[in-house]
Length: 298
Image (cartoon, rainbow, N blue to C red; front, side):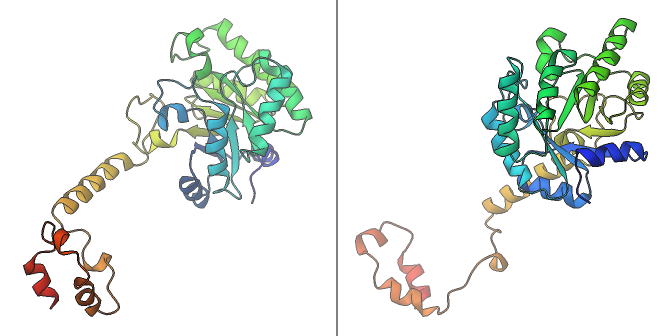
């Protein structure tokens, strides 16, 4: 079944949980689709995991389009959601529409995601009216890391919790088809989930959300710069990759790879005998083609 913004709504209504992961390339996208993941987010987290930035703020529209297109080419039934990068939608409704349209057309997205609550509702409304499905994002919003004072849990006080609920209602009314709830107390996330008609996707929001999302390098143990509390490693692929790289390095240097199984043969071995006659004497004398090697050919 093809996953869409509509099927997300149906899954919430039916009490079915939604699985999401971040994704940034074609090969990984194909593997996630084969595993049955409902949706992938081409997140601006690629700034950290793929480009090595300390935050997401430096990610550009061009970055999102390039990575988004690669992921979309690997997905047929999986919903592909593309993040709108920092300052690609905050300036004006016109700017937001233009950039969201680019992500849908050039990045081949099935939906876009943006951060913020009531302040971005005019943009959400305009996008949805233009036929662009929008996923919202509340709680810890990485693009606002400087105003939030770092990666901190949000909604811990009564006033903060009330603001999150108000923002959740606002983005729902504006037309968002779902909302990511990041790094907020689990009871609050569950409360908001029950209060909304649209599905919630948790990341550090506990098990009461309608779905879950993780950065795939985090859950595979591939990204170790920082491991959030909410991350569970479902496989230590990073360690396996390091071991494989070490084994490759050792075999190359020991000349045990490539072996005969991984090499090609000449159609006629005598080709080298004929080719030896074409050697330039002045170069053969100073290179690897010595008398002992030539004797083997004959």
